[in-house]
Image (tube, rainbow, N blue to C red):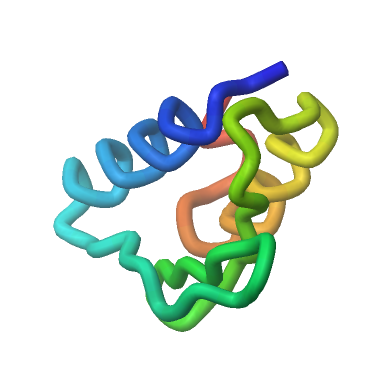
Length: 71
């Protein structure tokens, strides 16, 4: 399990290091919609997120950051 706050913090830190912004777009029920350079991801509002879901979020952002940037 991955803590939701750690996942968001890791993406924001990587984005800031490269002069980009990972920002909250809107709240949508049990999920939040976040955006990085036009690529949107849905992040569940649970304290802990399943590893596979976390990797899926990272994988979605690979197109903006490069393959396996999060490993």
